[in-house]
Image (tube, rainbow, N blue to C red; front, side, top):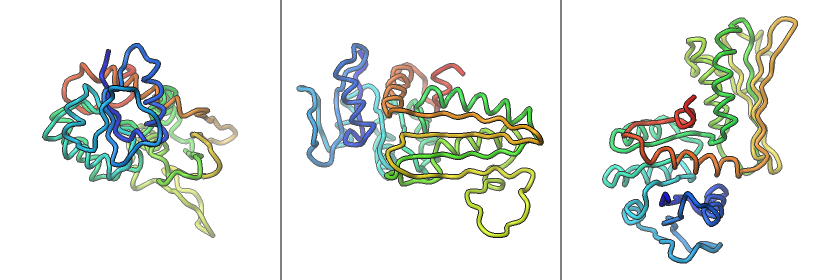
Length: 255
């Protein structure tokens, strides 16, 4: 049975992982990292600590769903006390991603802005379509709950990056995330990435390919955050026996 540690147990996904572990016969919640007292029950015998070194050393694999600052703090300590880490934190910037790459030289790390198995398949499919339908315009629209802080979502950016790579484009140069006023015609290589926020939407991602006289749309809808928690657990089980490197959710599924 895999002994996991949850970094961010008080968050929405973290709580779900804690609950899933109670009923699991393949993972055991060995420890949680908490700066303050938790407002929910933890199984007896589970270590609760605010010491990152002790937290890392107490488990076999860490699952992290926190904030960019929290992930940075975790990795800085993990560089001295390596452990396999599954990172599902969103809103990471380039310096966080560079830190992940550096840490992956000392431990196996799986980083995914979305742990959904369906999104992993979507990402693979749109690469093929973006490459084959090169004259089609690409527009991506994501919708999330009103609590979400980063925009566009990490998943939308990952999908956009996959489309850009399939066409040998630099996403930073072709991404448009807002249109207003008389901006002129859409450019050929433009990739639109738009964000909607409202209610309690777990996550909707629409990737559209728009041509002359026809269009093709791929829509992934997450109906429950359990999807992300279950995906993270599957990733942790796979990551445990991998060599030091940086992995994606697609790697864990063999895609």
